[in-house]
Amino acid sequence: MSVRQYIHPRNKYKRPPDYKQLAVMYPEFREIAIMDFVGKVRIDFKERKSLHVLTETLLKHDFDLHVNIPADNLNPAIPLRLNYILWMEDLMTHSKLEMDKVTGIDIGTGAVCIYALLLAKIYKCQVIGTEVNERSMEHAQKCVRRNELQDLIEIITVNSDKIFKDVVQTDRVYDFSMCNPPFFESEDNGFEKIVKVLPPRNASTGNDGELKIEGGEVGFVTKMIEESVEVGDRIKIYSTMIGRKADLVSLRRLLRSKDIKNMTWTEFCQGHTTRWGLAWSFLPQSIVNLTTAPVIRKRGKSIVQSLRNYKTSITFPVEDKFSCVDDIISFLRSTAEELNVKLQDLPVPEDSFDGWACQVTARERSWEHTRRKRRLAQQIVLKRAKGEDGECIEANTCAEETSKTENVTTVTTNPHEENSDKEIPDKDVPLLVCKLWVEAESLDDSQDVITQSDEILRMWMVFENGYGGLDALHSLRQYLINKLGVREKILDNPSKFKRKKKKTKESLL
Image: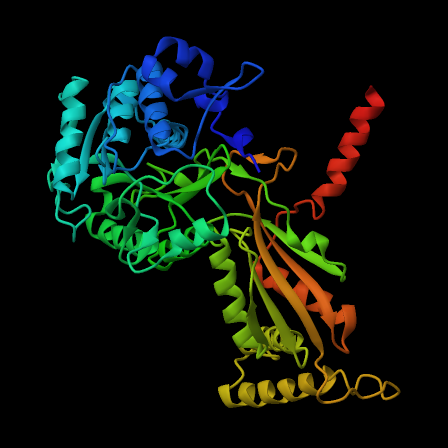
């Protein structure tokens, strides 16, 4: 399925190149151009040479950049690279940095140093490209000299065991870093498996050094994150491209595990391909706030909406206490432990980036016991402070009273004894079994593209079974609302509001 509609709005390839014009203007492109019986010009994307010539021609025609791509090196698809560069411009602008005054680092710049060339040519900014392969480094330097960009671009060799440490100087601050890491593991034949299962639309380009690395992209970016912790705010914004959806999820969790909450992610959509961008910073959010930075994300459909079981939800705004889904997960785990409630993780569809699901099994209304005990304890503390006759009650008396009230609470809240006429449930049957789905959403669901970071968190509660029925579900929901400290009212079912709004517009017509 084509995802061209989600391409960055400033990407000039939002409209496909005019191949007929390119064939007329450039003899080398004319050699690989194919004209069909209706006069339409196309190229064979399964031919490696055609891809190289197309990229070289586009760079020359659209950016006045002159390069030749070595036959055994990776062909840098220009629309994808431009999506990444435009996002970096968005992040710089959002952080009140001017592009012609910034300095960036391109990790693994490659033989064509495509990011460095485009950044320097479009924005006139300073770029340092790092490369471990001597041959690629030499070819990149030739590209820089050929385009007379030596005053803006510096290409250096680095140790393969280091990512930032050989390039970042202790007395200097850099504005951003970019990276297009190898996607595949060195010992993994994942690329060959993909080719066998689904023949590629384009010819494969690139050598093993550009496509594979030990640990794959997760291993490489993990190392990048760990080094970034040491380098700190000497680089204002770190970023990388991600090739797999599942890897994006695990890397975002890794950032949170290191208490890095100033981060964001976006999608790079072009043709039939989607990649992802991940960025993080160690600067205070008062200086650089990535959580509110512009993004482009295809709006996914919530899987919960398709479930037929009875469901309800708790919706609340993203804030410091709960700034992401992982914060809610931690809250639910600790709460389940306090209440002696079983919580079991459930697999989540790969498309649910910011989603998490679990099954909750409760044997008793432990949340009600907890609430009553807390209230009684507060009353006793009040009595102890004031005293019934205006004098302090002794500590041992309070202890006895607390014990008594707890016993009373246990008796009065036992659901089996509230009504002797009710049938006592089987001991093996739980009070409540429900699923919890936690998702991050945007307040404005009128568009299928999200351009701002998530603004609200939604916790769905889906009833499955249990002798407590829906009453137990709603009782637990109210307990969670109180414990979460939710105060701001957000529309619980935005789809209803959307339909009503649509109806009003139609009536005006």
